[in-house]
Length: 121
Image 1 (cartoon, rainbow, N blue to C red):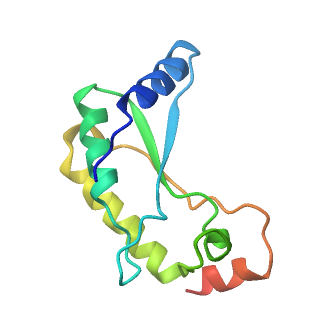
Image 2 (image 1 turned 180 degrees about the vertical axis):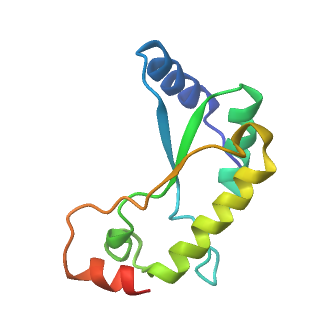
């Protein structure tokens, strides 16, 4: 299943653009393959769509990975998250408009004990 909600992205981008803001879009890092690697299919569809609209966007992969175990019952350690970011960087390189786009993250909220294990990988 690819990216399907182009109208919502259009509205979000137009709001940011009209407000003089730069959009940083967090791609869904919770879409995982059976081996726990990041499933990039939805992200690639979204990147292609955004590029076709010439949207000037920066990117982030996921939000608060230290909470994934609570949200989906599956942890993503720092090593895997690093591999996922490298995979996202490779996807961005495939799309000319985003080959030099900024990449942010991971965004970690409410740092607690499990943050240390995330960073340890």
